[in-house]
Image 1 (spheres, helix red, strand yellow):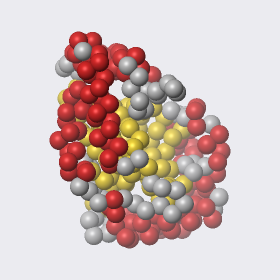
Image 2 (cartoon, rainbow, N blue to C red; image 1 turned 90 degrees about the vertical axis):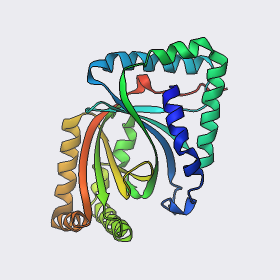
Image 3 (cartoon, one colour; image 1 turned 135 degrees about the vertical axis):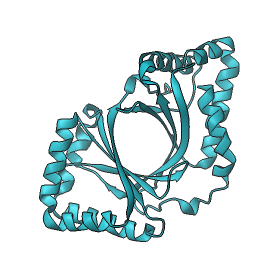
Image 4 (cartoon, rainbow, N blue to C red; image 1 turned 120 degrees about the horizontal axis):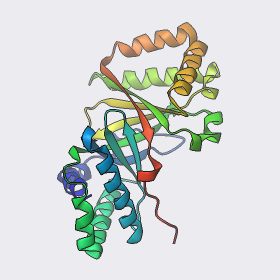
Length: 261
């Protein structure tokens, strides 16, 4: 969508000036950056938006767009387009690839854009980092990842002077989870806001087959953590500014994976 591209370009220069030292430093695995477009769709236009999004996927596949994206939808009609990128410079390459498709497709490209007209309220661009040091993964869930399209997001907004304390507490929590064997129950992925987000913020994301499956896993995890987990949670709550939650579904039909050459 051209609207998504032009809106993101407004922050492009700012992003390029950001120091890489602001990223979470992972020792075992390098943090993964994501360029994200959060598109807020009008409730009455969800069907039209999704039909346009499918046409968008078809057009980019036709002109061999080289970058993959995945789409997730929350129940409040936010559609998140996630582009994995190696670094900030790679974001500029995505813009160039968008422009190349637009030139090749010509009127066909404009017709595709017209399908989106009036379907959404606004677009919010951002950059997040998947921090592996502050995430933990269930081996059992890895085996059935393709079956788990439901997700739960715990959005934790922390006080601005508490970043080191947040990291310390989260690492203590992960150590307790590993000690109690709770990693076999549920996986959580920590996405940290870098640009375009109300920082400092951590998006803690868990996946499951459905809502019942998620809450069952989560209850079992906290049962294993016991009072020690409860105390760590209370300590973390004391350094939060606010907390929000979202639930939704991954939408493979709106996502795009380029074909191998």
